Figure 1: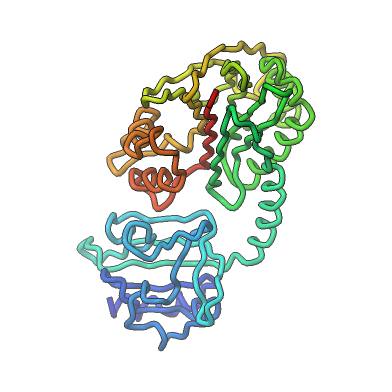
Figure 2: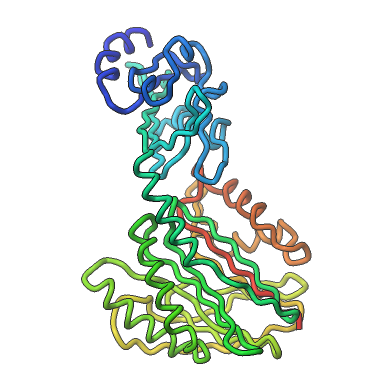
Length: 370
């Protein structure tokens, strides 16, 4: 390790990105000049200390601490022997305690025999970019504001966790008349800023056309036609599910456009997928969509989910899929116990082979009380 550092220190100190090197116990053995400039931590402050000992104290954008075992990018690289990239912004701690937005990459270091002898992490100050992203996030959050129904006959709960600072999922719920409520969940292809901008357009389309939800197939056709004009000649589209529920009778009218089928769950905990077929939004004009009629009985729930909630792979590259999601919900004793979105998120992370979920996750629960 000493020979490696002495021959590489000049190069590493010339980089504008911060760089530090740890042994397999995550004891810091090298800290670059740019690492000093970005964080305020001097070489003498950190050499010989473990990186998780109140130095950078990485957190993700949602405040989850990353300096333990399972979620630490550097530890993961040392254990797996693979490079770990964190494309979204995470936050490190400067010496004065302020949080620094960073883009991080970690990789294992091997000796001449191929044995892993440590790890290297590079980080870049993303403060200026974060300012723009936070402005975009505020705009997107405004577009996602929904006044949920105050109706004793139904209860609607929502959960939204974007992968990045801004996300590519959009959802909306509106009253159509004294008994009926329309709902819409769409997932733009990809995530990040471009997908986030498209969700703003979806918000405009919902505000403009949601009265058409009295006939969900008509609404979907109109939204598709207008989205085609915006994404013309681009490799972008949206999967979606929309529909309405009659709070008086429990009747559902559903239309699908490539989105995951919703789950109907009765009071006993039996799950049924309500399959609805239809072409994704934004591909071609004048697509005809068909409705599916379903019925909720008192105590039944309808779950709408974006695919980020189940298109998750574990360390054996096994897909969670919808059956796995159902099993996780049953593990949480749903529906006998109210749906705990934070607990479900933790179960999804435990299954995942990543330090965080790799797509936006949106869940809408509509419970028919009768």
